[in-house]
Structure formats: C-alpha cells, structure tokens
Amino acid sequence: MKNLLAAINAKYIHSNLAVYSLRAYAQKHGQETQIAEYTVNQTLDGILMDLYRQQPDLLCFSCYLWNISYVEQLIREIPKVMPRTKIWLGGPEVSYNAVDMLEEYPAISGVMRGEGEETFLELLEYYHREENGGAGGGLLDIPGITYREKDGSIRETASRPALDLSTVPFPYKEIGDFRNRIVYYESGRGCPFSCSYCLSSIDKCLRFRDIELVKEELQFFIDHEVPQVKFVDRTFNCRHDHAMAVWSYLKEHDRGITNFHFEIAADLLNEEEMELIRSMRPGLIQLEIGVQSANSSTIREIRRVMDLERVEQVTAEIREAGNVHQHLDLIAGLPFEDYRSFSESFNRVYAMKPQQLQLGFLKVLKGSLMHEKTEEYGLLYQERPPYEVLSTKWLSYSDLIRLKQIEEMTEVYYNSGQFHNTMEHAREAFPDAFSMYEALARYYDSRGLFQVSHTRIARYEILKDFLGEYLSEEQMDEYVQWLTLDLYLRDNVKNRPGFLGESRVSPDEAAAFYKREEAERRYLRGYEGYDRRQMRKMTHLERIGGTLCLFDYRKRDPLTGNAAVYEITEHNVRKDV
Image (tube, rainbow, N blue to C red):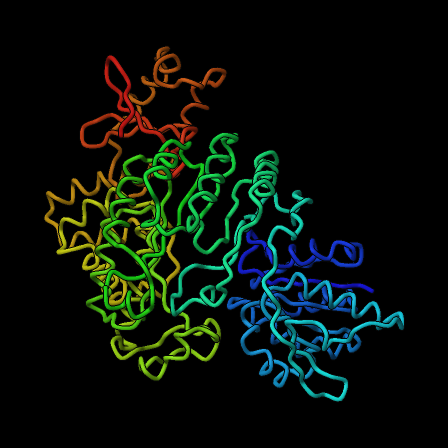
C-alpha cells in the first residue's frame, strides 16, 4: 500500500510541519508513506502529473487558507485519472466544515478533523486490515473523522481527545531536505487566549512537549546549522518556566548561525526573561508580537487580553538592547475600528519602531466566533479563501481600499528596511506617520504607479519626487543625502543612479584612498590577501553631509542587513552608529 501526504505551500522556502509530524507518528508504516511538497506557484497540471506518476493508494492533502483553492481543483480532476486512489483531507480549512466538503466533492473519502497524528495512524491500520481481509474495527471506530460510507451516506465520529505532544517523534531526522528552507517546529499546542478571529482559541487544551525532548531537537537544528527555525507555538511565552528553559538553552548552545523565531505576548515578559533576551547574540532570536489594535473597545470586543502600555515598555527595552528583530502586527477590519481609529493604532505601533510592521486584514475563518458574528458586525467578506474582510459597520470598502494602498507603501518603504533613514526624517514633514504613508499612497494612486512593477532604484526615484512636493529645494539637498545613505547601506551600486547627482568623492580621491598602505592596515581590517581592486568591489566610499564614509559589505548588521559604515578621518576610524 502506498500512502502520499501532499502539501501545497505558499512558497518554496516554506515547509509543512503537519505532514512530517503525521509521517513521523505513523513511522511503523514509514516505508510506504511518502511526502510530496508543492507550492501555489506551480501549475495545477504540473502537480496533477506528479501525483499521477506516484500512483498512491491513499492520498492525503493538508488544507489551509493559502492552498484550499488548489486542493479543491485537484480533487475534481484526480478521480478522472486515478479512480482507485482514496482521497482524504485534513487541516484547519476543512476541520470545521467537513460534511460540506464531502457533500460538495464526491471524490473525497473522508476528512481528518483536528489533530491528525493518531487519526492518520489508525486510518492506515484500517486500510491495511481492509486490504488483507483481517478482522478489526471499521471507520466508525476511528475518532475525529468525517467519512463517506460505501452507500454514499456521510458519517461523523466523535472528536478525538487531545494528544500528548511528547509522543510525536521528531519529524526532521532527514534534515538535508530543509537546507535552504524555513523549518517549522512546535514545543506546545493550544492557546490560553480566546481571540474571536482566531481558530487557535478553540483548542483549549494547552500542553507542552517534554523540555528534554525539546532541547535534544533544538540541538539537532543547531548542529545541522539550519538557517531559521520558526516556532509555531501560538503564544510561546505563556508559561514562564518553559520559555526560560528554551531561551536559556539556545543562548548557551548557540553557534552563531541558526535564528529562532517566536510568536509571543510582549506584556507577559517578566524581568528575568527580559534580562535573558538582552544578553543574547544579535540575531539569535526574533520576536513576533500581535498587537492587532490600540483601540480599547476593539480589544475588549475581540476578547483579547493585552496591556498595551506594557507592550510599549517591553518593545522599547528590547529595541534599546539592539539585538532582537521585532515584528509587530495590526489587523484592519476588526469591530469598532474605523479608518480614523485604525490610523491611531498604526501611529501607536509605528512609534514602537519595530523592524517590521505587518498591516494585515481580518480573515473571517469558519469555526471562529468572528464568523458567528458577521451579521451583528455588518461584516462582509470574500467568499473565496482567505475570506478577507470587504467592509464592516465601521469600515467601508472604499476605506479598506485606501488601507490596502497604505499597506503596500508600508511594505515597500518601511518593512523592506531599504529607506529607513529617509523615512525617519521625512516623518517630520507630516502630522504623523500614518499621514505620511497615506500621502505616499495618494501620490502612487494619482500617477498610476500601483499598476507598475518597479525596480528598487525606481522606488528611490519615486520617493525623491514625492518628497519634492513637500520640501523646499534646500531641504531636498539634505534628503538626497539620506537617500544616498540608504541606498549604499544595502548595496554597492556600481552604476550610480542619476537622481543622486555626481559623486562627492572624486575618482582621484578614491584611488588615493585605496592606494594608501594604511587602508589595508587601519581601515579595511580583514581584507588581508585581497588586492585594491577586490577591496573596491567589496566596499564603497561616499561623502555624505561632508563626512567621508566607508561602507563595508562583508560586515553587515544581523538585524537589518545593512553594511557596516565607518567614518574616515585623518587619524582614526569609528563606526557610524
């Protein structure tokens, strides 16, 4: 019997923890169970052809918001070319409407609801018995499934009790498959909170993997120099001793390569945890913090528990330490949040100065409390996945369109990190941060720039032209310097863009600098063995605001990716903070 666990990921660098966990739990059938991972960027025909070549007896799809449309199209075609293949679905996108899925798609044999490890194993045991004519229980004896009987009727078994997470074997023993991808890992399941827009709140059984197992598995990632491991725990720091044990282990065993990503509640961090975080290597961990809204009425209505003042204090202390990437989230379309209220939420989170500010839009998920309250909130949302909000009693569709444009400007000019200095200083020319991105969005919209694919250099040119409408000619001379700094912090651009004007470092001055013997000894430490031409390729000289600066692209900030910058003087070199 050949079993295939299929995952269609959003990007190639992503991996699907669920299918690897299912295979690991069913390891007694490991030889006959394979995994196939695809992406939404592949053609449906290509995926269908690959599935056909593998000819599985049992085909199981892992279903999420980002791939359910692909899965639905595939399960219409698969029976035509593989009529004997039994198709099962699992995952959050089908767990709460399993009967509807079976009624709409006659080719589906069944749906695994909720946690799938034990269910998948028992399903394999059932099909083995059926294939070999052995005695034993039927599908009706497997908890957590909705299935189709041979007569076409649909049956649903009782939900399955929560799994002991420590019984799931480590899914990543073949780590070579993940060398260029993000590895997802979980040390706990369930969530202590009850946010109305989230499905995680439905699983009230909060449990953790045995900490000694977790340490062994973290060491495996560290030893294999995995670039990034993302914990999928919904609120990683909800249990203090668990968070301290994991973070302490990472600090003590760090080898300077692997980055670990955690989703946390910042207001739950205590001083002991903060002290530990401040002591870590820059880039060892990064933190994702879901603020969602600064509107107190909204926070109460969505049943979220958060001390926003404490969040502001904690994020400020972490930022001051300068060693942890912070990613803060907002959600547009929540109840009691109108356009003006959202602008206030944006400004308050923007003032926390995270490395990334994610402006997301409400997804109305089946099974969530938000879904039940659509009529009460006047909530309209798209019928197709990801069921994104269109309007509410408080937010019109036209306002949402404006927020979509502001989201794009935030992604390009803030989250990219490529325009940091320019945008930080440009903020002074506007009433607040939201107004600046709002004005930039209007500028793009009025000139049809949203419909065009722009190069990074073009983005600089557009920003310069935009600022020219708000600043004097004298001020623009200063801002061109900020644009110059931002450009060369990221890349050693050899073909100088015209909007920067002539270089303020003459060819003779640059040649003289790289000819100086002390350039190798004093200014370019670590370049021993490189000739002057090679050093020029790996560095850049630029005069900014009267200061001669050396950009060193071999040394980059682990949080921002910016090149190290040194001020060149007659007597010394110092890092430009």
